[in-house]
Amino acid sequence: MGKAGRTAGGTVRHLVPALALALAVLAPPAYAGPRTSTPPPPWLYRYSYSLGLHPFTGPDAVRAQLTDHFWMFPVSGSCPARIRPADECDLLGGNPVRVESAAGDHLQIATLPGHDLGEGLHIRFTFTRTLGFHYLVVGAWQDRPTPCTEAVLCGAASRAGAWALWRVLAGTLALSAYAA
Image (cartoon, rainbow, N blue to C red; front, side):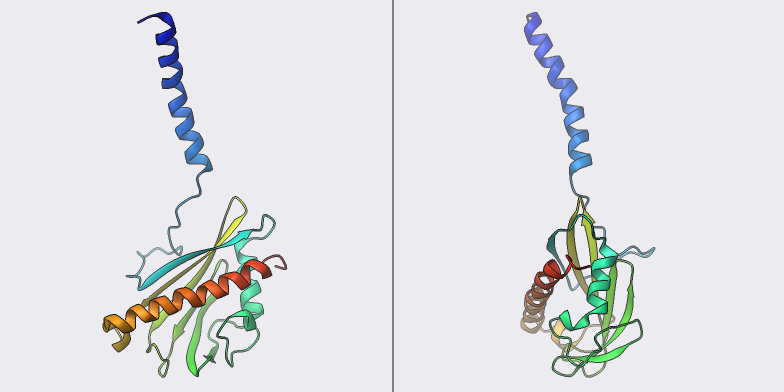
């Protein structure tokens, strides 16, 4: 092999590690779930939605925008305009929930007896930011199976309805995040 072949091959061999390093640094990190010391629960669903570019807004500010103006929640029902941990209220349709936590980068609610989806469904809304782009990750799990989640058709309809509902929330937050 001539000198030109060795030089080109050597250049490529030196560029590959640099390219791999650049991709590792620039690629958005994978979402690892809520920051807890315990492994995540078995998810009923987990959806991620882009909220757009908001380089001067932190994830906690977007969460505060929602919890301080809860009327933006698409099914806020008779809940107060500002929600706090331990608040209990009825979402649209008389579906009771309790606010389990609302701090930092997340909001978590749990369904109570009388909710259409059954008691013990936990829904966590986590807000993240990567390179100025914000995301809403919504995950749900339950303490024990309900009649709906045990029925294939009802469970599928519930997950599809949740995807659409949280998509509406993401669209609202994409706009309101500018005010956060």
